[in-house]
Length: 110
Ligand code: SF4
Ligand code: SF4
Image 1 (spheres, helix red, strand yellow):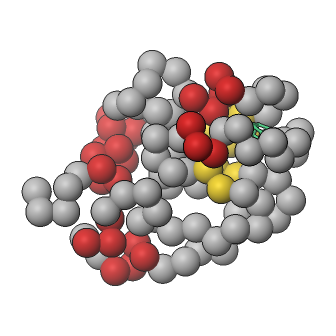
Image 2: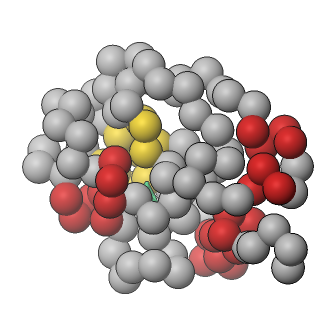
C-alpha cells in the first residue's frame, strides 16, 4: 500500500525530510516524478511539474511512495508523524512496491 496524509495534518513538516523517495510535499507545492532521483535521464516527462495534490496540508505522491520498501522496515512518515495522520491507503503488492522503488532509483545508465 502507499500511504496518505489525512486532513488532521498540522503541517509540522517532520515527515518530509524522512521520506527516502521524496514523495512528501508541502501543501500547494508542485511536484515532479524526478525530484530526489535521476529519473529525468530516463524520460523528460518525469521532469514535468505536476499540480499539488493538496493545497492546505502536506501530501504524499502515491506514484512515488513505496511504503519505504528497500530502505526501512517501517514507513518512516507513519513513525514520525506526531498526530498519526499518515495512514495506509491504496493496496499494492510487495512486488508492485519493489518495482516502483526500482523505477525511482535505478541509475540512469543501467
Ligand atoms: S511510507 Fe515511506 S516512501 Fe511512503 S511517503 Fe512515507 S516515508 Fe515516503
Ligand atoms: S509529520 Fe504528520 S502532521 Fe507533520 S507535516 Fe507530516 S503528515 Fe503533517
